[in-house]
Length: 407
Image 1 (cartoon, helix red, strand yellow):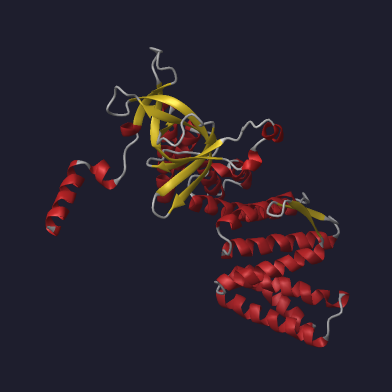
Image 2 (cartoon, helix red, strand yellow):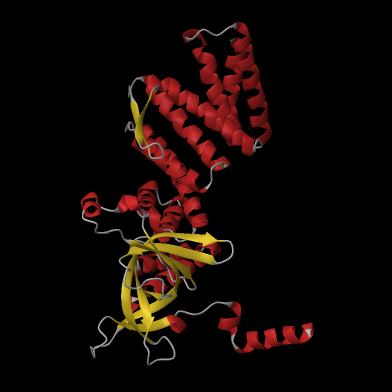
C-alpha cells in the first residue's frame, strides 16, 4: 500500500508539477478583475498572490474619539492573507480582494469587492509566508476571498528577473553586464531597494568611488521597508554601516568635519538589531562609530552629539565620556561572538589606550592602571596573531606597545 502511494505521488509530480510542488508561475495566476459587473469594459489585469485567512477589526484605539461618542465605528479592518505566490509584494502596496465570477469555473475573471494596503509581510512555521493589510471590508465579513495585485505591464516580474540576472553576472565577475541588468530592474521598479543595495555594493567593491555607492545606498535606506527578504535587508544594513564609516573617514581626510554619517550609522544599527540582536559585525561596527564620535567630542570640534533613539522615542545627548562608554560596551558584545578577529583587537587597543591616557584626568589607582596595561598587552598579542601580515597596522600597534612600556 505504501509503495502504491509513493508511485501515485511521483506520477502526480510528473503530470502536474505546479500542483504537486506547491508552486505556480506568473502566467498561471493571471486574472482579469472587474469593479462593475454590469460594465462591458475589459477588466484589470492582475496576478493572484493568495487568499484571506481572517478579517478582524483593528484595535479600539484606532477609532476616532468623536465617532465613539456617536456610536459610529470607523476602525479599519485587518486582513491576514496566506501568500501562495509572491511576485514582489511590498509594504504599502495596494492589493485587491477578488470574488470568483459565478459563471466561471476558474479564476480567469472575478469581481473586485475590496482593497487592502499591505502593512507587514512575515513568515510562519506551518503556513509559510503571510501578510497583513488594512482596509474597509465590513461587507465581506469572514468569507474567504482571493487576493490579487495589479501587474501593469508585468513590471514587477520583469524587475525581479533583471535583479536575479544582475546577481548572476556579479557573481561571475561580469560587472558591466551586472550593472546593465540592475539598471534594467530599476527601470521597471525605481523603488526596488534590493537593486539599489546591490549597486551600492558593486560600486564600492569595483572601486568606482563612494559617491555613486552613497547615492544607491541612500535610496535603499529610504525604501528599507520595501525589502522582500530579511536576510538581504540585514546584509544591506551591515554593508551600509561600514560604508558610512568609510565615507566619514574620507570626508575627514578632506577636512570636511561632520558627524552626520556617523549619526546615520547609529540609526542603521538600530534597524539591524531589530532583525538580529547579537551580531558580531554590527556590534564591532557600532563600537567603531562610537569611538570616532568620542574622538570628535574630545577634540572640541563638536561639544554635544544628539542621537535619535527610535526604540525609546526620544533624543539622547552624548558627550565624550558617554561615547567611550558605549565603545567599550559594543566591543564586549562583539567579543562574545568572535575573538579571532584582527579588527576587534585593533579597536580594543585603541579603546584601552584612550582609557589609559585618561587616567590623569580621572581618579584611577595603580591597580587600575596595571589592569588596563594587561588588557592592552593581551589585545596587542592577539592582534599580531590574527593580523595577516598587515604592515601598516603592525606599525601602529608597535607604536602603542612602545608607549605602554613608557607608562
